[in-house]
Image 1 (cartoon, rainbow, N blue to C red):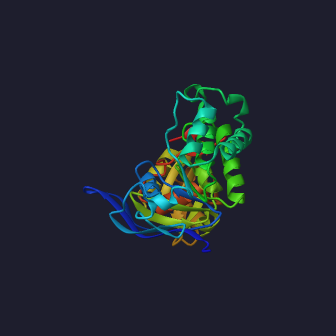
Image 2: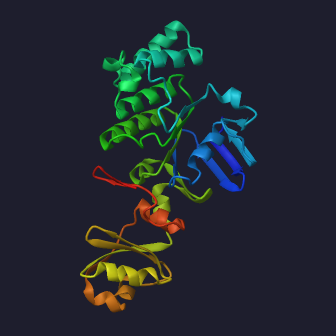
Image 3: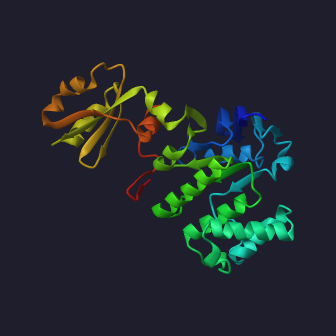
Length: 320
């Protein structure tokens, strides 16, 4: 059995004059959590729908679990799970009724279905909510129900389209623990996100921008391969320093984070600390140091958009 679960070559999808996904090559291995990272409109959902067989590519090839798509989409229906970005279950049914409905769709017998549903109610802390109408549940509760329905038939491959965009940070952390349990059990997971901290939890990620794949690798690999050095600056006139830096070709980005300016300087500058000290505004600097890159630095280095196109989540605060 091949270790490669998903393979695409030249994957492209056009909607009229708009190219939503442009010549994307992917290789996703069994048991990994693979993330699509990028802002809204970058092609994440379109790519995911082509990988599930819901959308036909304009050009390129797709192979999922050894089956060519889209012609073998029906064969893959029982081996894949898909959790959509918005809650798509029946809001006027109870938790148990939603699970029973999905169980019938996938052809589980009455006995096997009941055993599986009871297991999922316990596994995803839904026991006390079994008779709750789904439409009256909180965002985190609906999220757990949606995941339970997506994995009810024990799929080999699970697709999650921005699954935590509408829940609180605690629910998001708990959700990701459940994903690692699934991954540890052998399930391959493809997840799209615009949250930096979620992308950092993936085994590998693809950075997407305007339909193009800009980078692909583990978060650690991508940080090591960055073509910029990261500096942090404190001083009395950070806004003035930022204006000066942003027009320099050696500077990829300069963004204020609290009382510090985070500056990405091209690696062609041999000694970026000394180089910044030569600038006219350097007299206002009180602290200047080179620091470890993070995934947001990777995104900014590999794309052409501003650094605030994605959400950074730190200590429960979400910025968009």
